[in-house]
Length: 86
Image (cartoon, rainbow, N blue to C red):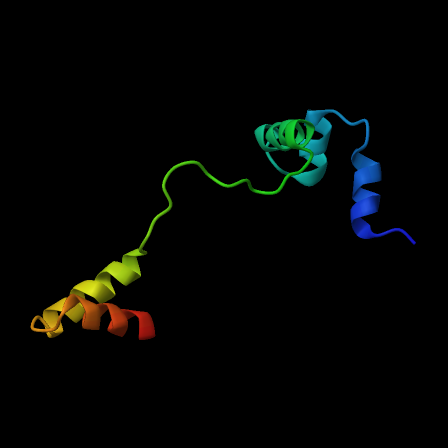
């Protein structure tokens, strides 16, 4: 039994980048980059990015500022526990 993705792959086999772009209605640059990625890595999954990961989200930063303003007499340890539980 053939799946929908198998059908699509068979239809796109031996087609040019331009033809694939027209069939799928996506830019040629996208088709080209996906084909290149597949040839180099054997997958089209998103790879981990380089650089230091972000430690705290913008929402987390706002929550921290708000907590510190509300309770400026608390210790850093108690503020840390409060943020971890929320």
